[in-house]
Amino acid sequence: MSRIVLVTGGSRGGKSAYAQKLAESLPGPRTFMATCPVIDDEMRERVRKHRQARRSAQWQTIEEALDVAAALRRTKQQRVVLVDCVTLWVNNLMYEAERSGKTVSESQIVRHCRHVLAACREHPGTVIFVTNEVGMGIVPENALSRRYRDLVGRANQIIAAASDEVDLVVCGQVLKIKEGKR
Figure 1 (cartoon, rainbow, N blue to C red):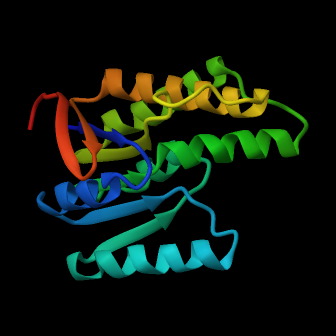
Figure 2 (cartoon, helix red, strand yellow; figure 1 turned 30 degrees about the vertical axis):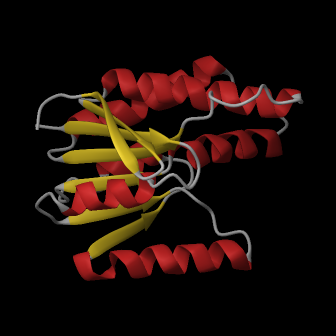
C-alpha cells in the first residue's frame, strides 16, 4: 500500500536533509529522484555533495526533470522514493513550455500533479516529496515570477491534499502539519 509524504518549508531550512533522514529510517531499497537539471558548475558541485551525503545508505539515483509520473512507475521495486523537488519540477515544466512559445496554466499543473499522484498510488512503498513553501514572502514584482509562485502553490496544495503526512521544516525543526498512516 502506498504512502505519500510532503516535506515543505523555506529555502535552506533543512527540508532535504530531513526528507533524506526520514527515507533512510524506512527499509530500502531507496531511489532519489532528482528534478534539478545541472546547468552550471555551482549546481554540479551541489549535486556532487548531495550524492556524497547519500552514498552510505546505498541510494539509486534517477534524474528526471519533467516526467515524474513515468519515472515513479519505473521505481516499483523500490520501497522508498524521494522526489527532490516539486519546486524545480514546476520550473522545468514552465521552462519547457516557454521554449515552445507556450505557458503552463494552473489547470495543466493540476493535471500533471494528478498523473504523479496516480503513479504514487500504484507504488507499493513510500513516496516522499520535497518542495519549497513559496507563499510566505512578498508578492513578486513581475508576471512570470507571480505565475511561478501560483503554480508551485497549486502543486503544493494538490500534493498536500493527497498526502498521508505533511511536514513543515523551519530552521531545521519539523512541525507536523498532517499526520496519517505509517
